[in-house]
Every structure is written in structure tokens, then in C-alpha cells.
Amino acid sequence: MVDNPNKLSRFWQELKRRKVVRVITVYAAAAFAILEVVSIIVEPLRLPEWTLPFIIVLLCVGFIIAVILSWIYDIHPEGGIVKTEPSNKVKEDVTKPSNSWRIASYISFVVIVVLIALNIFGGRNRVTIDESLAKSIAVLPFQNFSTDPNQESMCLGLTDEIINHLYRIESFEKVVSLTSVLGYRMPNKTVSEIATELGVNYILEGVYKKIDDELFVSAQLIEPMNDSHIWQQDYKRPYTDIMNIQSDIAIQIADHINAFITKEDVERIKKIPTSNQEAYEIVQQYLMNWKEGNMIMIVTGLEQATRAIELDPTYADAHAMKGMALLLGKGIMFGKRFTQSDLIDAKRAIDRAIDLDNESSLAHVAQATFLHFIEWDYVKAETEYRNSIRLAKGKPFSFAGYFLLLQQMNRPEDAFSYSEEIVDWWKGQALRCFVTAGKDEELVDILINRIGKFNLIPASYKGELYLWLGENDSALSCMDIARSESDELFNTNQSQSAYATALYLNGNTASGEHVINQMKKSSQITTSGSPNFNVGAFYSWIGQKDSAFYWLEKAYDAREPGVPWLKVHPAFEILKDDPRYWDLYERTGHKAYDDFMASKNN
Image (cartoon, rainbow, N blue to C red; front, side, top):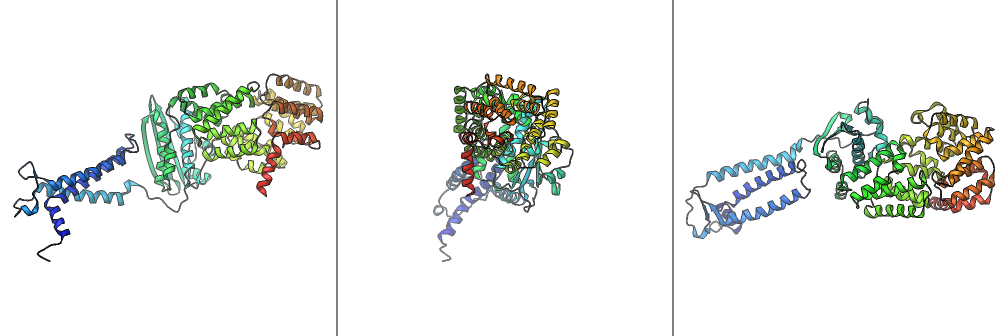
């Protein structure tokens, strides 16, 4: 047995004789080094995500070739490449081992050991995190250091998209919505105080600066409890790379706090909605208008939406924006009477948005808006609103419509649960919930003392709310203030109806009728703002039932968007003993919703 070594031993000796082992050692060290370098440069050089797998495949192929060549050939000590003779033809190996090969082998071995140790124990300078902490985070609004004020929408959009990416990673237990962090744009509190107020364990803060065609973004992830800076990254990229930056930040956050993230999560986060920067900016500005309550820009966005579609016909959000602009600008709020062509165009744009990207939150909220205000299908509308909220944490347009729907369907407590998520300019709408929930005293306290988030309620809103409470004197006082202060909402049909009612019920019947007659004239020109419905509300308030039903039927025929208020508006309480009310109630989708809720509860 000793004179006849086994085959495995002979094979090992042959590998060493042919210096294959040394080649493998050197090649492995070089491969390790190459992979480390590639992993480091992929992000700064914006190399495609397939770069690292491609390099690995190349190194594997190269390994096979290196082994084969080292088996067949050798480098002669005196220079040149020679073919290695089989062992049975070599009587005695008198060639001295090459010192260069020996040194290379030793160095390679050391390199491999060091790289393995660094990867196992070094962690690339990662901070050890407390695994017991829940994965909860707030992304504070990035500070805009750009000199161009128009970049504010892009800066806020960056924050918004990072929040949305994190929200859809299931391993995160809490991601604070954009609406909730907007109050920390210029914080005068410490990060620890903010984290405590928001109830989170991690805070992301950052700065944004655009100079010419370059974008500078710095992001910093902090664990306030231990005052630990977990991760920090500076990005210097072309401005057109903003969508990739926000995706990378979200992935880096998940990675550095050890949040489980699936392959599907990564693919969804890295998905780019459009390759056209100008089209993306148009949509971001539209969303910014929602956040700031710039209703004129919201409803007149049709031209901009059309421009965005021209720039990128496959951009789902641009089509959804067009649908919303048509709905809001040509019927629900402003503009003239809806035509069949307008409805078809709006529906076509919304359907196109859904077809292009079924995960577009804006597309689903546009679909919900159409179902809610045009088709009066409240069951399907609720489904679409919830889809939009699921897909986009804290986007104001998602919550605003759903919040209204819950109020109109007489679900004030459910509406209350979303009151923190709606933007400040929409807070006045929240107060109607106090009336439908029977919290009259609490509402009066808010109206008088301007408590907390309700300290900026427009006078016209206050006047209408006092009317809902039966406080007619206070209603008229607030409406007079709204008129004298040029309150923007005062001239809406909703406020004019409340003003006419307050005048009439306080004895100034002629002035009240004059205001209503003006609304009747406007109803012949436009159905935007629901003039017929609000005239009907006036006649119901003053007890003229037949006139109320006449105008409510006109509102039904014109499919006015105010009709969903039929269920809970206190003006119509006196109509509920009349069969005509319940007939209209059923035709406007309310009974179908009641039946649906009853089936859910059973």
C-alpha cells in the first residue's frame, strides 16, 4: 500500500507538481479582490444591477480556464511557457521551485484570509443595531438648499417616495406618513424629541440641493435612543437620477436596520415610473399642490397633464392626473357643465392609467373619485380609495376623498381615525364629523377656542358648521366675516347656500332669496360646485319641501357631485318622512351602500 499510493493522493501530488494549487490560490485572491472593488464602485459609478452577477460569472469561467491552462502549461524558471510533461515521463524533477510562485502563493493566502476576516468581522464599518427595537421610522422632510424655489416640489417628492417605498416593506411595523412629518420641515426640536413625539425608533433626515444639472443629496439614518448614527450617504448624481437615489436610500435603510426585504420588494422599489424627467416634475408639482391646498392648480392641471403624456405616453401617473383634472376642473369643483365627451375622456384616461400601472396610487384615487362623485357607486369607490392608501402612505389625495366618503356614508368615527392624515387645509372638513357623531359641545368648544390643529378654520366653514348646529346667529356672524375678509371659500355654492339660509332664518328673507336666485342663474351655466343640490338644501332648511325636491331632482339629473351628502346633511332631516326622499336615496346609491355594510356586519 505504501509503495502504491491511492489515486487521490497521486492526483493531489500531480496538482502540486503542475502548480495548479498555486494558480488556484492566486486566482482566488485576485477574484476576491476584484469582487470587493466591484461591490464598492457599483453605487458611485451607477453601474447596472447585473454588473456584480456578471463579474461573478466571468470569474467562474476564468477559474475553469486558469485551472485547465495551469494543468497543461507551466512557466519555465529561465523564461517562457512550456508544456508540462506527464509524471510517468519525468524520472526526476530537478527544477527548482520558483520563488516568485511561492511568494505569490503566500501573499494570495494572506489576502484571502484578510478579506474573509473583514467581511465576517469588519462588517464594512456597520454600526451594531439593537435587534429588539421595532422597525419603526419617520422620514423627516429633506431640507431644500437649492436656490430655485421650484425645486421644493421635487425635494418634498423625494421625501414622499422614500416614505412610500418603506411603507410597502412588510417588515416595517410603522412608517410615519408624509402628512404627519410635514410639521417638522424646520424643526426646533432634537431628533430624540421628534422620535418620541412620533413614536418611532429610527429617524432619517437629509438635505437636497440642485445646481445646474447636478443633484446633491445627503441622507443620514439615526437611532435617537442611543444617539447612534447608523448610516450616512452622500449622493452626487445627474439631476435625472433622482428616482434612483430615492430607491437606493430606501433599500439602504432596510439593509442597515436588518429589515427583511423580499426580492419583490426590491424590484418594486427600483421600478422607475417614467424615464422622462420633465414629465416626472409635472406630476410632482401636481402632488405638491395637493399637499399645500392649491386648489386652482389642482383643478386646472389638464394642460400640464396633457404635456406630461406627450413627453411619456406610458407614464401612468400622467394619465391619472389628466383624469383628475378633467373630473375636478370640469364638473366637481370648477369649470362648466360636464359633457358626455368630458366623462368619456376622464374615464379613458383613468382606465389607461390603471392598465399601465395597477400599482399607481394616483390612478386608483382617480378611479375612486369617478366612482364616488360621478357614478355614485360608494362600495367600489371605497375599495379604490383603500387601494390608493395601501399603495401610498400619507399622500393627501388618497386620504381626502376617502375621508369625505366616510363622512357622507355616516361613518364619523371611522372618518375620525383618518383625521390626522389629512393636510391642514382640509382640516375644516373634519369638523362635520363632530355633528354627525353627536359631539356638538366639543365642536362648539373648538369653534370658539380654535383648539390645536383647528386654529385656522376659514370663517365660511365656521358659518356652515354653526348652521349645522342650529346656531343661526353665530352662522350669520361668521358668514359676514367671511364676506368682509374675502374668504376664498365664501363664493362657493356650498357657502353661498349656507349664507342665504343664515340670512333667511335670521329674518332677512329678501337677501337670502336674492343670494339663492343668483345660484339658480349659475346652475343654468355650470353644475360645478353642485348649485342645484345647494339650492335644494336651502329650501329644505327653510321648510319648503316641494321646492327642495324639485332642485334635488335637478341635481340628480345633472349628476352633481354634492349628492353623496344627501344621507347626513342636517338640512334634509325634515325630508325623511317623505317617500320621495327614500326614492332619491336609493337612486343615488345610498341604499346599495347600506345593504353592503349590513351584509358585512352580518
